[in-house]
Image 1 (cartoon, rainbow, N blue to C red):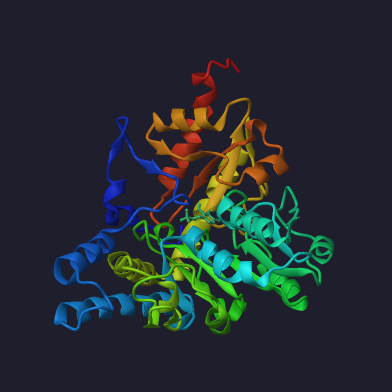
Image 2: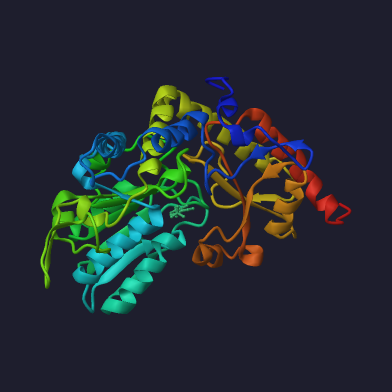
Length: 413
Ligand SMILES: Cc1ncc(COP(=O)(O)O)c(C=O)c1O
């Protein structure tokens, strides 16, 4: 592996025994753990600042405002966007709902279409179902190749047409794990004048992102999948789109003038940040970015790629295990690999692995239409996901314990 430092030592939650075994945490795609520096940043905010940003004129309030806005600048720089294009939200789901409520409901009319890949997480699927139901637009699916996850040119051209007003897609599916051809999707959407919505929940911690260079219109992410606390996330929106959009939540701190019967709104991003925000979370998110940057993308990407190759190759070598989607260990895979064990429900696999201290995800992964499309047994799968703190020992422990599961279930062979 390119770098052998064990980053796990920085993450207090990883330093524990589970069922008498060392915890092997392989569920970072659901949520990643937080390093001590991130926990310290949140404690420091509440211990020393703790006042409500954007409200008071006293020193503590001004320090809280500066901490909150400096965090916005840090996140904006991480994504290569401008600060007024970054709205702090609770998570990717809320970010996508803002696009739905504040953009889509006004932009769509009967006869229009919204297009998404069938592999989308419910957070980037259910809001579009609701938008279609409320506006009379249709929701169309791009059917990905069941093995490689690729979307054919023919599929893109047939589905993304002059009727299409919104194309929403994940950068990496939380089940298939392989990088989507998002440049192709973006180019096709632009060719028909559709707005693009990128869900980068699964790439935000695994690769550098330059949203201006990608030229998407909106992008959504969660802090808790990038070593920050739960309850803080973000929405990127192009300045001209944010300027035209009606706010989604109304109340304090998002206004310019309020009279008895009408209100004018503050410019973005404040327009979309009604009420007291998760300032401690924003500060901790900036600390998570500092942590990632201190390691550096070269080291981080090389480590994760090497581990992923080891994991996928190892799964391929196990009897009775089927990798979902692309089983090529060299496929451009980020963070996750889903698999099934012959005749065993994923929940049983996960429970038995838990008895060895191994935490993996099992079930539908909030992607029920994909489970149907892939015709997976029990409509479910196991999923192992990696982060910068995982090691070869973690991967090997999974590969060593997985073959024990069928025996525990009573299968003789
Ligand atoms: C691809 C993808 N999009 C969206 C989400 C939703 O994230 P959150 O629950 O933080 O809103 C997830 C969470 O697993 C995800 O994997």
